Image 1 (cartoon, one colour):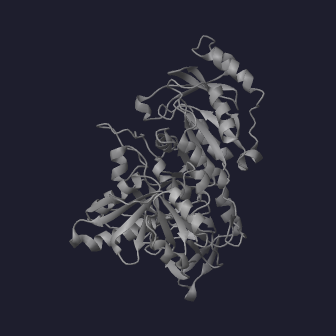
Image 2: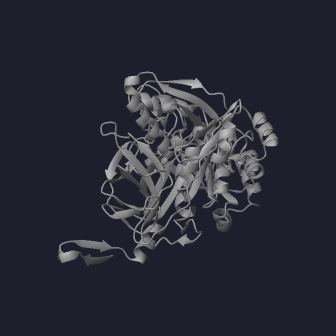
Image 3: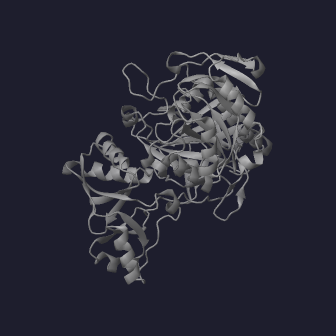
Length: 548
């Protein structure tokens, strides 16, 4: 790091060398955890924090009197429902590495938020319920990872409960996901009674001492598999299965893993801490460090290039007392220093970074510097939107993160006209955050706009926040539409005259034509081929059930 004197010798500025930036980037592991609801994603997040020494006691996501709520679930509605609704960014040190864990929403209604988070990650941990195998949401999120070429580590959770045979789950991963699974650990026990885990890399058996509710680290007793008591419940079956697995080998094909073709598989129980440390070690050893990111011209931005970042999430009112607005940005290149002036690519305006934080659930602390792979929370980022690029010195613009095609629509109005100003401000905020899409009629404006969503719970979150954060009581009513297509000005007048259809505008100026159902849309397309009716997002064809 070079020291440069400022103007008049009054200020000293620290300039990082490309070698230092590269070295810091190599220490980073930025990853997300994805799963079907209730597979144990948030519990695993907590246990990673526990085993890295960030928290002394893990909370449970189940709402029970006297028990802690999960660190990563900070929103009031999350703690009431026991699920993850928002994405959170948690940073912690482990084995001389800096891990940036992006906790994604667990509910299927928030897959769009998960899609945005995966744009900011370099790897993902896919959590599978050992009793259920690959479920619908797991499959959908895996396809997002595949489309983004994100390497995946697999964790088969809840092995302490009655479940499906491990070999059957391995076959399912290979057949349903077209991934080559490499089991790195193996469970020992019978359904409902997990005795321990075999670490195939070291050829050792790990026996765990249970702790109350799994709230503290479990003591581990390691022994060679040759020294395991053969009378151990489930050992005979496990040893036979391990012999069968020898044909697969224990060496992970790193090139295949980074290409998204191979997945290392780990077994365990996040609730009781079985196998958690093995998985966390694998994140450090296998997950890639930040690599060059490609801009809109398909040119790579090297990690040692001047500072650049992109916003993958915007969140308001994490601090109710200050009514703040935070933009979460992923550093792509260079060295970030708090207070540095950067340029916002979309507006070409300068942006001050005086208020920069790292987030730990709802807690925040000032961050003085950050490196490629890190996530920085920029406070009072009133003009930063999802997908915006920030840069210093050398201009760059990264591709936008596309929006999903909405599938459910509701009209919304404020029930207290004295709170209309707060209602309108809340709609703008929720729209910019990506919580909901707000569609407006050119004549009606914000009097009774249409909310568009991928899942029903998005409406629940939107109304909850409008009423509790903005003080605007609202009423939702059904809107008679189920499918949307992008259109243009030339087609809009004719579409508005059709029964069972309308044209509304999105905040970014995009015109969306809404139809009662897919059959009616197809009829209109066949009869009026001159009209512009394009899919909102091509990827939605494989992200949905095929109904849009």
